[in-house]
Image (cartoon, rainbow, N blue to C red):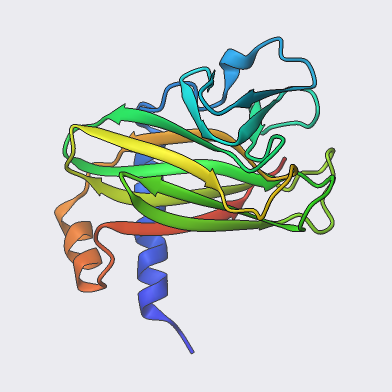
Length: 206
């Protein structure tokens, strides 16, 4: 059966993604490139920072040569224990698209890695199944969340939801871009009950 609602949302999301690609990334150090010279990997504990990112709980590994990120560097949200990172963004009122690359440490732990993404307290859960993946074939996915912003300062956070220990979700290429919302798109999304938040995922070639 043809799903008109799903198809319309998919087309609309592609339009939002195309607009975002032409916009400036409002996240500082979304590729964790300030970790230049890290070597294989390094661990940062709660209270420390990785570039512009604050480590707010547990510990987080900054990954250099240990595995390949789509671009720049990446992080493992479970360093010695499940961790979290956050960054405060200065955003104007309007629509935004969050995108990030998601994979998982294939070396151990549960095969399915879990991460909670929060945008000013509004949470979205993501998982990645590492079955069949390896450090030379991470299987990165691009995840996307559309959101509307009204606050002057918006906190973006990524929190591991794994049970414990190392080997967590891997993150790279975090980006938030303004998405001018055409009136027709806004009306269509409102009719579908989708104004506020949408989510999507696609597989990367890395």
